[in-house]
Amino acid sequence: MAERTKLWIADVMKKLMVSKPIEKIRVTEICKAAEIERPTFYYHFKDKYDLVAWIFFQSAFETDVISVESAAKSMNQARKDFIFYERAYEDKSQTPMWQYILEYFVERYTRAAMEILGRDTLDTQLRYSIRLYCYGAVGMTREWILKDKITPAETVIRMMFNSMPESLRQIYFQEEQ
Image 1 (cartoon, helix red, strand yellow):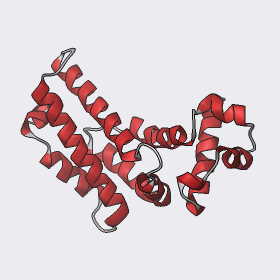
Image 2 (image 1 turned 60 degrees about the vertical axis):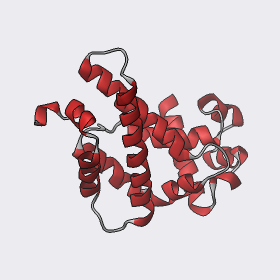
Image 3 (image 1 turned 90 degrees about the horizontal axis):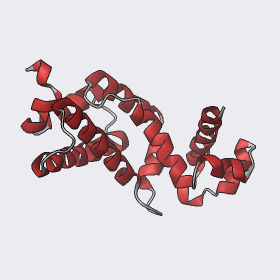
């Protein structure tokens, strides 16, 4: 039940974001449109920014970050929700959304590397390479969603993977070598 409520609130937020930017949407407005009480909203989310981040992470959580097909599917869905992503990326009222996304993917790639390597920690250079790669990938994904109406998602993902530092590619794509 709780998950359905969160999805309902998220759907309402996406609809509201079609007509106005995040900073002009109030929690009261979200609650009214979703036909819920404010305590219900705050039970699920700490604020509207937490809600927007949750929407992002719902899609990202289901994505296999080292699969062209899975990552492309996620990017194609983002393109379908263009207005939501455009407004979320444009928002400057709190921590920019791209920073939430960056930290999320740094954590995902770090966890994957530690699991593949069978380690509890990674050396400084490897952590730096992951962060650098994720920074570029998040930036290029943002640029693709907002500006590129031509290049297929699969092509963008392949270019990202091809641009990955060799030290990371050796970890994440061992079986392909």
